[in-house]
Amino acid sequence: MASFNRTAPTKKSRAVRRPWPSFAPLAAARLQSGLTGDMYLSRLRTILAFGGRPLWFEALDDFTDFFVTVACPHCDAPVTIAIGDYGCYSSIRDWNLGDVHQVPLRPGIPGELTGTGRMLHETAVRDGQQRLAWGLKHLFGQAECPGCGSVFGIADEYAAANAPAPWDFARGHTKDTL
Image (cartoon, rainbow, N blue to C red; front, top):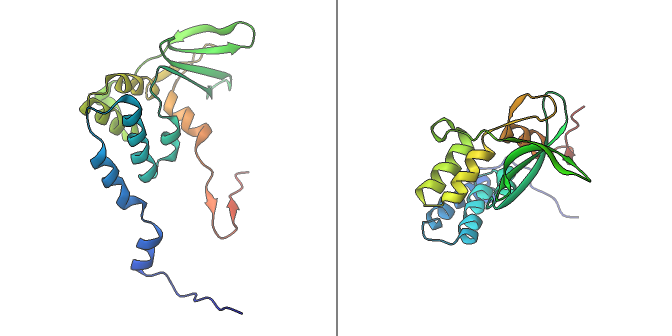
């Protein structure tokens, strides 16, 4: 029967097991202006994935026809967020009537964006990706719930609903949140 060495990980073994942070700068160096929308978006998603931001990797879109549903943090109504050629609005989606009671989104102000939103917007502007920068201002902006009228951060509610569950490596599954 094979025996396993259970010594503490060394600095070198940790570096071998977690190479992703070292890939982020390499991916960023390959991002440049002049790329087509799809190629640029693909490389920007790679930066997010290697940078440990899988939530935003999946949410990043070209914003021609972007729809996502989030729960209103005040009344828990399912609010549809639309960003694209059909408009930028929040609504309550009805199976038969479509998006009813559309309320215009409140895009974020570029100088006031923080964290991932700021990094993504500044990168898109730097590289001449105007459509992407425009969509990011809306994604990291605010919406009004058509049901109760409360205003909330779109990205905050998206992250709350879609963030990956914390993994408990000792137990081998996601942690119970109850």
